Length: 388
Image 1 (cartoon, one colour):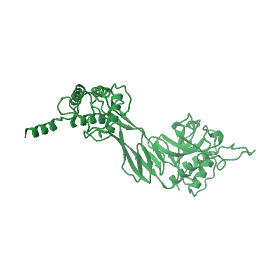
Image 2 (cartoon, helix red, strand yellow):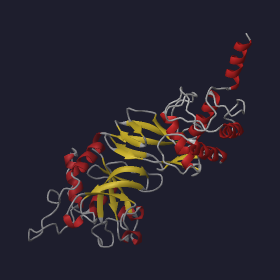
Image 3 (tube, rainbow, N blue to C red):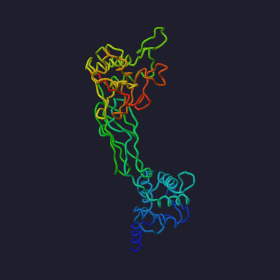
Image 4 (cartoon, rainbow, N blue to C red):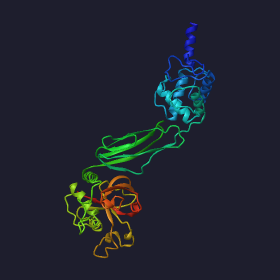
């Protein structure tokens, strides 16, 4: 009876049969697990108790409670992903050693085998006050606008930088519209989804809305993407000598992409300015979309660029592209197609005759806003939205 009570009491207060000798290996422990001296075991118990992770006796004898507290400490740091069960495996050993070397002063080899020096480094690590997470932020402003089949990678920043738990998980509110795996968002189908990142402790989240377009705009982008890296010949004008494109071919490119996407209307111009003029006047099923913080461009929209900004001294926008009066003062310089949108003033685009490093080759290229000195939001007059 007395023996039975003593065994039960030992279980309650966390007693164990793990040997207290230096680097002793118990028969019921994995090959990677060696317990330190009784003194180090006791010091680790004391520190884990101060952290609120250990509630057993401070006796220098590790049992289930002690090992669970060790697992919890490494879990809180962000490295250990296994169960908090007091039954260590190789996962526990590897992450205890990593913790001892990263947060503590263990200088040895990271071989996943625990010894006296590893545990001394572990003790140093848990004496360093844990830094809690205060926030997490997805590094992408505004609404993400995508077309089906496109993927984009986002990152999450956990603050403060010294926080122990920097691991995060990603989730989606609507997998039919968009899925997410480790920050890689893939547009699946027409619709809307909220992508959420959650810190490991579950206390902090941040979300970003994702809108997935389809229909005509998706077809425009599909056709534009297919032409990346192609030469100018299908879209541009031959020179008088037949040597290459001497006239700008950005409008020709946009018109051809619209045609391939099924746009049923002929647009009688090769001029960026006149194309914009048609949209401002609502002609040829083109709609003018003003730029600004309240207007997020959509994939498939046409960007109208003014690289020399000569329009700023011109009359109101309604007359800016009146080509019968001083067109040299009121001209746009370039058009291209909106691709992936991350905010009203940050997006990628596809076009021909872009003035990029590949332009000498006459290639269709994909670029970003902001990117080069010529590709900033300030160089954009507005957007044209084809209505098919």
